[in-house]
Length: 411
Image (cartoon, rainbow, N blue to C red; front, side, top):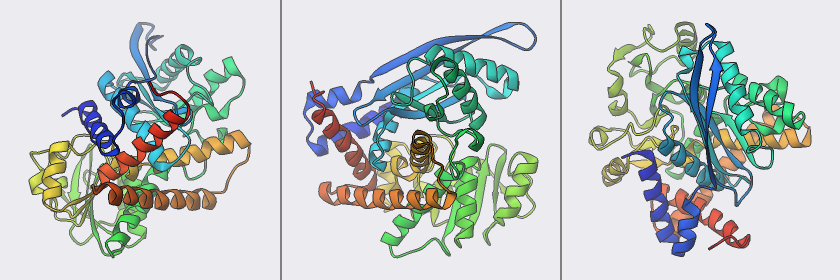
């Protein structure tokens, strides 16, 4: 099931639980604006290359739209739409004053040189600069983009609008990026996991974790869980998968992955088939890579008791049903991975105030937001007698619906 179908399905279930009026339900689903631009750049060899850039601005009832920009060969309009909608609910669940957006360029960043990526980013910014802005739509990094991409967007945008550090988040700290932003999604995953486990009378220490994905989110989550006494028994990334039932030495693995651009070949663990990471024997499974990885084919074989969705949309609705029958508790993506957007909000606030927080303040505020977020989700679970995913969706959709009605926008 593709991401858009699944997201719409979750939205409709939440709207039904909340008893939303059908006109309001329809208007909440329709994106505010969809942008599609052609970006033509000269390549290093002098030839011209064209790429398609997208930006879907889903909803701005609660504040400026917020969402990542990804550079990936399969930037599919349906997926961008689903992710923009997911950002609307995610920012509402986190209770930060934003709406949702998402964008990207259909390209393979690995095939482009640094100067080609810079030209592409600047052309894309030129095409959309009057449609983004500090109080309109604030982009951030996503797959295939990072702080340097944000620096280029900031610079290009500033040529038109004057120096505006708050127009993007996830910037380098030298240009107004926030301390703690790099680790934020992974740290949010840690805080979310702690909140869920304490509900079940457990703590991180002594639990066995398997982590799919060892990029920014997966590696930070692994490091922080390891520091808190969790035992990481299996890890995978694009290069391969490894396991060690006694627990992987995460500091050594981080060093190995940095030097070898992946976990493959790490001496302190045994190689396993990449697909088997999801069905490894563990207490807590953290999918932190791509969407749709947990599906009806493998859901039956999952041994974990808890799944923390660090990736966007890693679990198909069919798998959801199979897992809930097995009694597996799933902490949904729109809450579990909201640490990144929450610290992006802190970065935006610091830029607007022109006042930098220290890292301790950033992390403490993040803990406060993640802990409160879990309580709010649990309240909705009690009110509507539903699982955590529906608890999070009803919470997010309800907040957006209330803002929409209060602003007089309902049809």
